[in-house]
Image 1 (cartoon, rainbow, N blue to C red):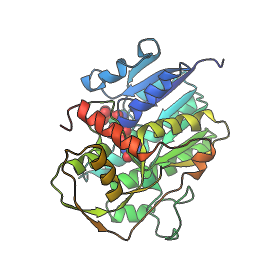
Image 2: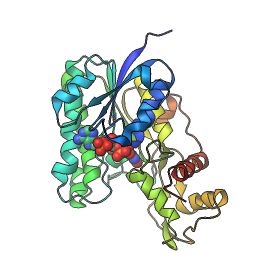
Image 3: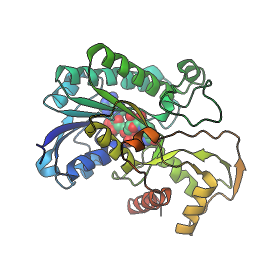
Image 4: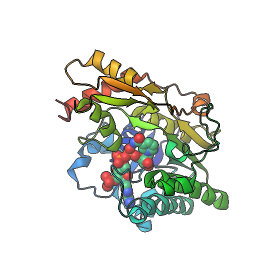
Length: 319
Ligand SMILES: NC(=O)c1ccc[n+]([C@@H]2O[C@H](COP(=O)([O-])OP(=O)(O)OC[C@H]3O[C@@H](n4cnc5c(N)ncnc54)[C@H](OP(=O)(O)O)[C@@H]3O)[C@@H](O)[C@H]2O)c1
């Protein structure tokens, strides 16, 4: 059996971070370090309750903008999963300070600390938002890893989150090319799935909004979604597979909003769902072929939706 490794997860208490910590602990092959801005905050209690946490999880107080705190957390690790980054739920009034600096300087701080600590591989969580805003991409072709979002368009549209993820991922590759640090980036689409923490993160709220009963008519967009547990698995797969390199889009089969609502209506009759769907022309899709070639298959959207709703009910987010 392979020797146990030490892996560090930044943003361990977030939606994706929590599932990734759980996955690393579950196999018994990893000792896990998780970084949190405030380890004393009760919202992180679910991490300490995880199986294996008592023996193999250490929580570090660290802020992405504080290099020394990040360096302490990654020293002695073989692998680092850089998950932390702001995911704002509304448009920021000071995007440089509130979003972009945390994403870009934060990523560079993590990479520099990893380089100094001789970490073997860093898996950086980027996003399909760093892929989709590309006017030069052929309209009828699914986006793949060759596409990069146009920074000027993100700026012009004030899509600060999109810009933050695009800049951070680009800077990560510049740093890796300069130093030889082994990095892989994973670009998930919209991540949904069961919550481990008791409050809903930004993207779970997008799904929860469909249950509110206050919108009779909605746009029938094509949703590019992925289950949070599949994202965690993609991070581990790209870390453990020595042949993995570059970017990996992480997106399951796209689903129309109307089809998603039909699935939910069949599972949970009692909620008031939108009834009218207005078709829209735009139908972006992204191909996960590269990730699937590493051997990953995505779970069915129905399972994701069912498990999401059950967790919202368990935490009292939905009645
Ligand atoms: N959810 C999606 O649909 C989606 C899709 C593609 C990519 N992603 C990426 O996935 C990652 C995690 O997102 P998520 O959905 O899990 O969101 P989340 O639950 O809001 O998690 C974000 C985490 O980042 C931490 N963080 C933010 N700024 C920080 C800083 N300066 N120092 C230290 N920690 C900081 C937050 O810590 P606090 O708890 O202290 O605020 C939180 O733990 C992000 O990189 C995001 O861009 C998400």
